[in-house]
Amino acid sequence: MADLDDSAPAPRAPDHLLWWNPGMSGKGILYHSGMVCTWPEEEAHHQAMSALHLERAGEHARLYFLVSPDGKVHLYPRDGAEASELAALLASADTRLQLITADRAPTAPASTPSVASPREQRRAEWLMWQRRGAALA
Image (cartoon, rainbow, N blue to C red; front, side):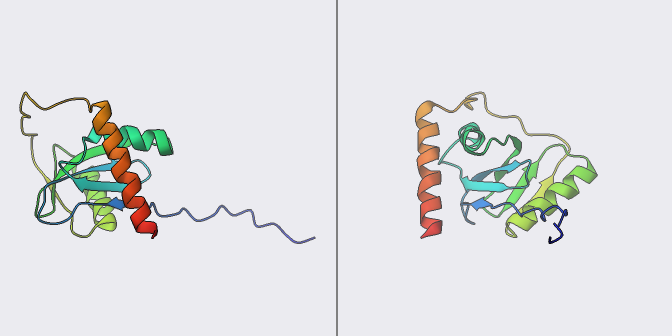
């Protein structure tokens, strides 16, 4: 009888969903698995994309972020150890992203919507599946 290998399989690197391109404002989510998802800012709210991923993969978001047209990712505030870890995770997903930290967060406009509408959630889902299909083709 052959010996069975009791070692655990090596952890698999997460598949990133990177739809942001330089020259446009974007949004992104870092998940607990290390997966990074970015997209053009006007396509969907963070909440819609996060809810969709939770429904499909059962994984909660760790961090929402915004991407400036030049690839700067602004996070407020972060301690040094966590900022270094996040910078490494973002760089491993997309070398065009550059983590920038600051002492405090900017204030958001009062008109910023806090919850994505059902229509925005459906659009986010449709866009995600369109891109996945295009990536597989």
